Length: 531
Ligand code: GBH
Image (cartoon, rainbow, N blue to C red; front, side, top):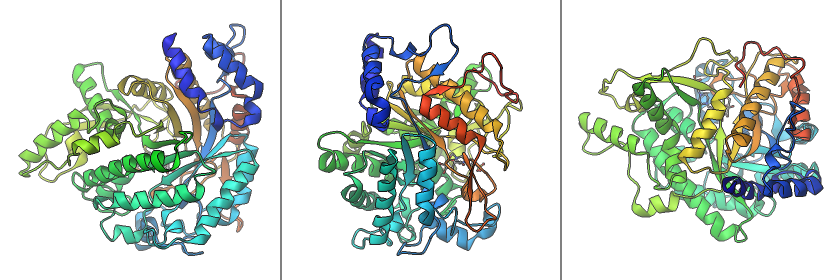
């Protein structure tokens, strides 16, 4: 009971994410009922199988600047690492394309806001392109056209009763900062603080929810150790340097926001971390240890410094990388160390945890060999596989495993003492086509998993964001993968967006807060595993 009360109090404070008209009296009564302890079950009377979220649970959709804006070099925008990378190496992108035009949302934002309004969602998560605001990355030269674009976008959203949830960094570093070493250069933390200050100054009065970084695991590990821009391919060294700078930058921006811009404490600032669920391959203890090691390397790497009580890198990472570095002949660990002051500054620097979750892996121990060449995956020392029984999407990395989300949320609850979680991304790719019943089934089954995590397990989840509004540029997979509620028709000059069936499904969910009742006529779930 006490636990319930505590989590209610936290989630109710985020009521503003829900449009006021929807809150009104209902919000008040939900709050009252929550206090007497039945709020969560109000909609789940035994007679009906209808599954509803409380009225203060918010629904939204997400995009990212590079994936949708286009206009890569107009109105004063500077070059980003993704511009450079896709221009220099078109053959590395699956369909040899780039996002010079993407879905042209720089010009079509009004139309896009209308699509968002039509979905009945209460917020829109989008990212700001750093080099559109600061063409050289540095704060001495501000691009007025860039400011105007995002101001107009925010105004347009507010006119439709949609709140903005802004991601400050979704992978598109200004190229001129990459020329200084990008995130491996510690000074980048200071430059990110300067950029953030510009954003808070210009948009802070109208925007109350911020995500500093989207998926540092992806842009540090894939960017500095794998295939993504800037393509450094220095795994086991530069990816750790990147993470170290990013964690410091996140903490510094959080503190700066609270001290200089959010004195009344009405804003919300967090970070979006991605985590596939890591399920032990068998119930054996070695597989369980391997799975927990994978969770700590893939998620704890960023979450432990910010969300755990003690702060700093996860002990298992510290141990493994220290030992392996030594055996490889390094005089010091490849994993950098925070000062005591940095640990304290980063620890607790959040108002919510943003979770990007799509899929699940099975984990077993690796072969235990230490490679001569440093590597993040060798440091982690596990094997990641998938079950052939799990339904496929159109992305090779994404199998459909709805129960993995409930397990992820519960692991976060007990590992980090039940932080408020915003699901900042969840979504799926399927082949082109408007009749996307498979996407409806994906969303429906993952939302059931979220519902169980909240109302059965007491996880403090406050919002759900579908990735993505419309098909867009999927990084190294070009336009070949489609995650949209709206289909983008790339062969028409106006890049027409057409609603899929999933758009009207999601609209119904967002407007009613309830999932369709299909207890009497079970859906065809295409073999999906339902809770
Ligand atoms: C999200 O990351 C991104 O935040 C978003 O921008 C993107 O559009 C969305 O995924 C859908 O793709 O190709 O086998 O090398 C989700 C986590 C991490 C999943 C990197 C894909 C690459 C796997 N992503 N991963 S692979």
